[in-house]
Length: 319
Image: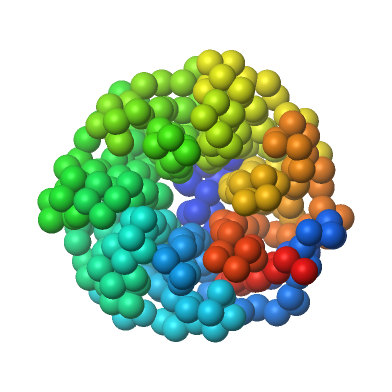
């Protein structure tokens, strides 16, 4: 069984327990230039989402931050919890959003992230949600450690716990393709697909049996899967077959982002910052990498990139 550093704990738990991380993100490709300043309070931030024209980021001790000016300034939202929040997602309307985290907790907003209320908490407070995906303002899916899976079809008025795996593997990340197909990546080679907004899931044959931290759908047929030890795989037939992509750094890749330019950016542990300019066929390192770990990369409304991690948020702007 292949595991990451300190596994079976999820990667976000590793960040929670890590020492201070200084994010110094710099792309030396001409597409981007970095602003050498932290732009959010120096706290652990684990995920972010675009909410209409605004940005919402979540992290330790129940922190929820909101920016209305493309991450130049931030306001702290009042939240009903002190539990670490690990994932956030907004419906296409930009108003209805959900954040999930430790203590089996789900909190929700109906006003674009200005105010939040607790919507669900599981009976076992040792459970941790790791990610959430809002399909629309009614249908939401939350996943987490040890096969934790919960869904709502009524905007969160009620949540249903379900079992989508026979094994208690961590379910790390949800994603949605351009035609609405959902993907789920997790431990021990777990790759799942849903064509009915999460009602049913089918397994995708995995190219290795280690942990995956995400599937990035590039188009209707092309997928990128990323995981431990720098492993990246590319499929051009919606996961029926996979080809390995050579990576210059054998480290855990926690996050991958497809930009509107069709560039791909990967980040994770050990100063890894990898770029692809050929639709995922090859990866090259940035000469100036991250200082240590990054939890999430996010493309924000003005085209800039936001790097989220233990030092807070760092902005990367197009020239």
